[in-house]
Amino acid sequence: MDYKAYIAERLPVEGVSREEIEESISVPPDAGLGDYALPCFKFAKILRKPPVRIAEELAAAFPGDGVISGAEAVNGYLNFKIDRRGLAEDTLSRITREGERYGSSSLGAGKTVCIDYSSVNIAKPFHIGHLSTTVLGGALYRIYAFLGYRVVGINHLGDYGTQFGKLISAYKRWGDRDEVQRGGIHAINDLYVRFNREATEEMEAEAREYFRLIESGDEEAVGLFGWFKQLTLDYVQTIYEKLHVSFDSYAGESFYIDKMEPVIGELQEKGLLTESRGAKIVDLEPYGMPPFLVLRSDGASLYGTRDLAAAFYRKQVYDFDKCLYVVAYQQNLHFKQLFKVIELMGKDWAKDMVHVAYGMVSLEDGAMSTRQGKVVWLEDVLDRCVEKALSIISEKNPALENKEEVAEKVGVGAVMFGALCNNKIKDIVFSYEKALNFDGETSVYVQYTCARASSVLAKAGEYGAFSCPEPNEQEFGLVRALADFPDTVRAAAEKYEPSLIARFAVDIAQKFNKFYFDCKILQAESEERKAFRLALTRATLTALTNALTLLGIGVPEKM
Ligand code: ARG
Image 1 (cartoon, protein in one colour):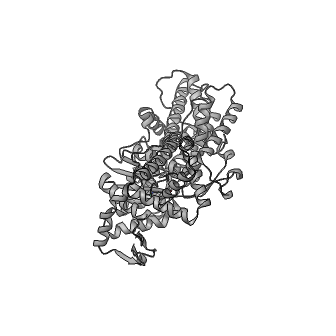
Image 2 (cartoon, protein in one colour):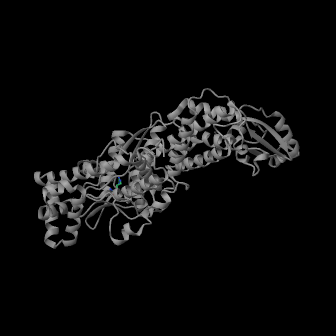
Image 3 (cartoon, helix red, strand yellow):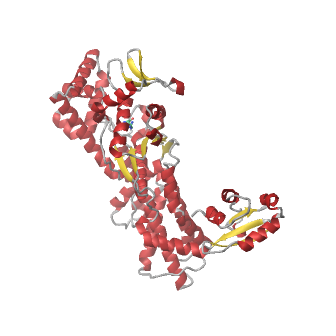
């Protein structure tokens, strides 16, 4: 609820615009004075009256209602109080009514958003670097869908390039069919690493030849490549299931090989293509950028060429209103160039392309650090975190049933939350200990709070309708925060920042726990209060569940 706007709308001041009034309203440092205040000093000149009188007159004319109970003039300030009971009643009945839809809207009805995320490379490890794009993209996917958009999740596979020639060469030299089938991506990666370690001039030439064979559709080469691709996809699928993400399209780079020509033709036609040392480029110097490479001197396409074709394809097939690329900030320049080229081609939809950049994730734990030249497989990080979660849970609550299941939600959630809880552009250092801290600003803390709320509700058994008493400080703090969820979801979509939802969840959990420790729920002073507090507990559980679900994190009933 945008209270400032709400107040400004009901407070006409002659000669002053509504926007100006809205901007002048602030939150007083002392809540005892009111929830919002408008200083009237600025208006003295325009209205030719002393501020004290202006405040008094405005106070007398302000209509109180179930949202803002009224206005009071104090020393030239106009102080407003939120109608706490009104807000509690509205918020709780809305959450009760909307349940798992609370926070959703139809804002995006009729609009389409494409989200390019995860976009793994075939035959390469799924490492910790893919964590952010996968979970951020997955969260944005659910957030936009929750707001009524049609969302198209695209895994722009890195499935094209000379490295696949190397892989075939390595496989033919040292590979064993059964071993690779069994070892999957790990076996493929080993072959690839070995090739790079031992490669001679002759082997490199052979690899180029194999790549050429893939391109020309040679049955054996294409077959082997298809097999490697399938093994990679089978493997990443198991990780996607753990992280609760899915895709509507796996059209990767190779998909665009036969779709580049018309786009390159259009570049040519529009006079944008120039030659530079045999290569074809789009000159971006006037825009302070290096040239965008379209074709190498040997005629081969590049990563950018395939992205250009992909953008046109997506526009044509999905007719998107927005096309997001959830890719690390290392590719800032690439996307700036790509979007510029599209703009230069005269496409007004260039403005709808967004690079959702994010920072790097590294591990605090030295034993698994990339610096020693070792890749950190995401799978290992997830397994390890689940294992640690299991040991903590077993210690805290030995009698808990389904410990493994809970540990999976807690451990995987902690890794995901690590990539979701900070402003996305920040580099993060992941620490198992911090991520699994039951009292920190963590997913575990939020999950634990959900379990606490569930347990209170289970103990209460049936409880019926409630009527709202005047909320006390703790109750009101919680209600007010809960009421913000729909705005938070919208802001998260607008700013491509799921961390807003993560922070909302932590904030609600903190406020709920304050309420839980300061106010008796089951032993409340009256039946009316008890019913109200139970409704508040139920609403908290609903909002937290919705928040975690949007982030892709599971909610255990007991912990
Ligand atoms: N496969 C690429 C990488 O790992 C990311 C692709 C991102 N998406 C895109 N349309 N360029 O770096």
